[in-house]
Amino acid sequence: MAVVAMGGLFFRADDPDALSAWYRDHLNVGAGCAAEGAGEAEDYSWIVRGGPMVFAPFPRDSDYFAADKQFMINLRVTALDALVASLEAANTAVIRKAEWDDPAIGRFARIHDPEGNAIELWEAPGDAS
Image (tube, rainbow, N blue to C red; front, side, top):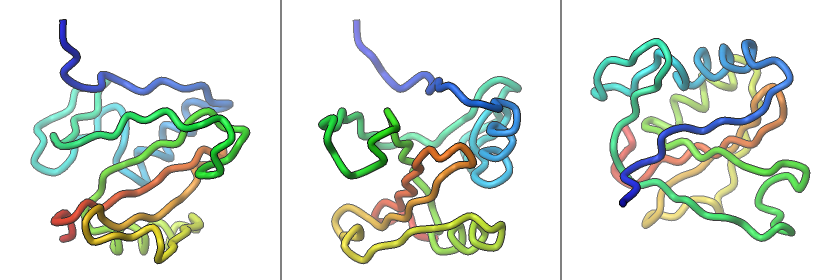
C-alpha cells in the first residue's frame, strides 16, 4: 500500500461558501479550478500541476504561523510578483521578507484568507514566468 498524492484538504470555516468563492476568485483554487496545463477540472475537484509537496508537522510552539491556527496552507505558484500585485489590487495584505527568499528554495509571500488562515505563496526556482 503506497500513498501517491494528497487527495484533499478539508477544514472548517465560518462561511464555507464565501471562503470557497474567495479562494476561487483570488487564487484559482478549489472546485472547478485547474492550473494552467493541468487538464480540465470536474465541478468538485481542483486539478493541480505535479511536483513536490512538503508535508511537515511543526512544533506546537512554532512562531512560523499564528499559534491559534492548526495549519498553514502553502501554495506553489508561478509569476509570484504578478500574483502579489493582483492580490494587493484586491486589497489583500501581502507580507514579503527578504530572509524568506533563497535561490536554492525559491521566493515566498504570505497572505491571510478572510477567516485569518495563513497562506504561504511559494514560487519554486524555475517557476517564475
